[in-house]
Length: 270
Image 1 (cartoon, rainbow, N blue to C red):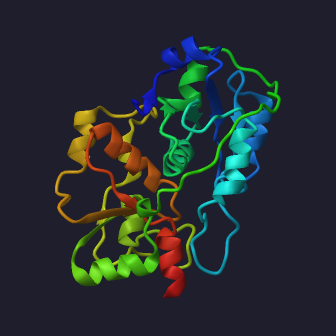
Image 2 (image 1 turned 30 degrees about the vertical axis):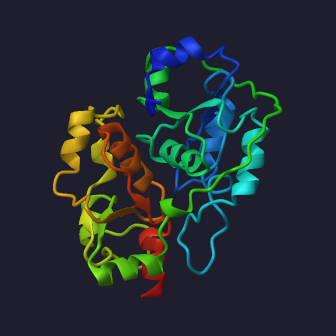
C-alpha cells in the first residue's frame, strides 16, 4: 500500500465504510491545542488521538519524553473507532509536516496493521482546497484490534550501545541540524547527539508547504547510508524520527529500526 494519500483521493473515499480517518494535530508547547483545534473543526468522520495521552505511555525517569504506548490500551481505542486489525484502511493527518501522523503510521505498522496512509499536505492542504470540515464528533464504533507487535522494529539504549561497540550500527539523528550539532536545545537538559550518529533532518522529507518529496528525492536524502549493517533512527523522543521511517518507505529503501527513547532517553543517563 502506498503510504501517502492525496487530498483528492481521500475526498473520494470519505464515505467508504472500510476507511477510518484520524486527526493527530498536536503542539509540544501547548498539549491541549490539538484537541481544541479538533473540537472546533476537523475532517468529516475523523477521530482524534493525542500524542501525549494516546500515542505515548506515561513518562518515567528513563525511556524518553514519549515512550511507546501500551499496545493493548491503544488497540482498544482503535477498535472503538471501528478499526478491524488487518482490514480497515486508516488515514492519519496533522498540520506539522506529518510529524505526529507519521508516529501513528509507524505504530499501526509496528502492531502488524499495514493498511495505513498519511494525508499528503495534511490539514493545511485540505483547508486550502476548501474541502468539507465539521465540528461533529463521530460516535464510537465496534471494531477488533489486537496488536501483533513487531519486536525487532525497535532498539533500546543498551542495544544502541552494543551496536556502536561492535561497529555494526549506523545511527541516524532526525532532529534539525542545529540541535544535532548542539548549537540549540529547546527541550532536553543537555545539547548534542549520540556519538557516531549521522544527521538526516526530518523536515527535509517534505516541502515548505508540507507535501512529501518525490521517491527519487527521498532516496537522495539517504545517500551515504550503509545498508549492509543495522540502521536505526532516533530524534528527541521517537516522534519525528517516524517521518524519516516514512521517507524510507516512500523511497522504497530498506526499513530501519526505531530507537524510541531518542536523545531524551540517552541524555537522561549522562
